[in-house]
Image (cartoon, rainbow, N blue to C red; front, top):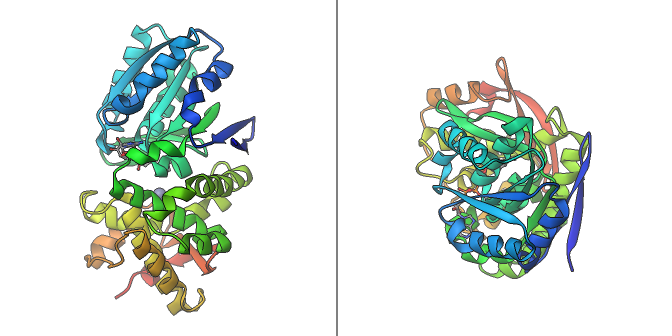
Length: 352
Ligand SMILES: NC(=O)c1ccc[n+]([C@@H]2O[C@H](COP(=O)([O-])OP(=O)(O)OC[C@H]3O[C@@H](n4cnc5c(N)ncnc54)[C@H](O)[C@@H]3O)[C@@H](O)[C@H]2O)c1
Ligand SMILES: [Zn+2]
């Protein structure tokens, strides 16, 4: 049965459909939402060969014209030059405001295609078909779209919601194990900030056995994110809770030039760091960091915090979007499933 989660936004609402095997119906969902004549499928060089032709063929069966645009797989593609290339090609292809853009891929494709959709001709409808675990539980929900600037990630972007999110957990079968593990770090994050029983559920499985539980896992995460986004669409308050583990996660990613740790691996280490610190500051129940560490091991995530230069760490945190003068809004947890925002001095966060 298709699980439907509605995300309410300030202006509108849109559905997330989750079902094993949903991909056989992608085209009919698209047909329902298409106001114009054609569909532009934006995908990457890994996902395209696996799923784009199948989607194009099933659209053709419903007499819908479509075109496939492929970008190279990887974070480097979330660039202004790709944005310009795609925008130009779509205009050359005579796209109109009533047509539809489909983001078929992981978070890179979702963020880039979403940003193109949000700006081209002042806004074209788009649908997210997320294919990585991270995209299915996080980046496709909530309306943040962006590209990177050479000086930093996601600096050029907007809030622009899709018309629908179509999730088929079956496509995760072709995902690389490290990329799957990467997504699991964000799943663990949801459990830490909002779901004690969800955390206990995750403890019953590991990276291999969890695949039988993807439908439940994805709908739980999407529901948590939808609830948070509904309360705080523009990240003034509660949406910040989703940044648990991210301050030090970004420090690690940036300190190693985004080459050594994946985003999820770094976020996992960031969660452990804050849980440990919270225990020492008396903000977090003792034993919480051990619980997180045990769960991370089950999902093949690294647990050893790397050595970094303190001054370099301070400099990275000072540039974080969440810092306000000498303090930074940091997310701590009282215990598993119970998170809060705590403005703390940057100096007090860094271990000497
Ligand atoms: N907008 C948001 O709210 C939000 C939230 C979190 C992350 N993000 C962004 O998401 C991006 C990371 O997303 P990601 O981890 O999905 O990265 P990604 O899009 O690079 O995908 C990871 C890898 O998996 C491949 N892949 C994806 N689906 C596949 C499938 N079904 N089978 C085989 N290979 C597949 C991709 O080609 C890529 O090589 C970052 O740019 C990050 O900034 C955005
Ligand atoms: Zn993240």
